Length: 207
Image 1 (cartoon, rainbow, N blue to C red):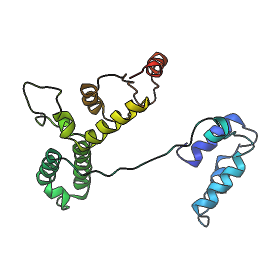
Image 2 (image 1 turned 30 degrees about the vertical axis):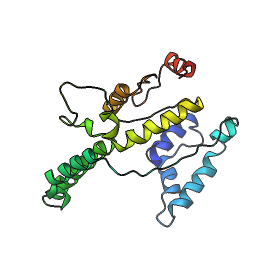
Image 3 (image 1 turned 180 degrees about the vertical axis):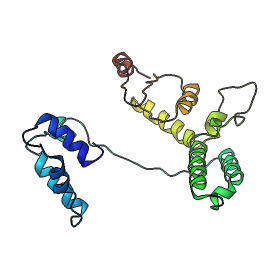
Image 4 (image 1 turned 90 degrees about the vertical axis):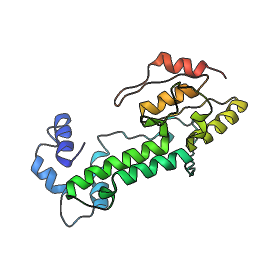
């Protein structure tokens, strides 16, 4: 739920005798003298008898704990070139010139373009050498992340491990498809799940 009133609407639908007055519900939790943590704690106490909340550790005890490792990389020569191009093209937005709303929109666009550059420069039209377009080693050495990924996949292959690679950019997955020799792509859009057969194919694959 996005706000307290939407939460009340849901509770009113489930238990109209208990949660009948929306104004009283809103006032109960929206007192100006209460900090955010206090409101959240009170919400938990009220909802505890009505909602069953279970975390992964309670439901699936056989899963290993998630381990997150952040690796910081320097960009390739091509990435540095495109990074500078993006900044120089929109230098006014970077320096805050123009209207406030316009500058914010342009800055958000710059951030997205820089993010694409950090993922792979071939996401930009004209960056990939060609024609002819070939899936050669340039696909790896022109992007820092691809260099590390290539080394990691060699290591995981030797260990017999399977790998899942997530990306919010479908075009980046296209590049990875050009790079990979084996594997299955699981196309998942927001609010959907990959097909069970594709997941089963992935689980059955070996190097």
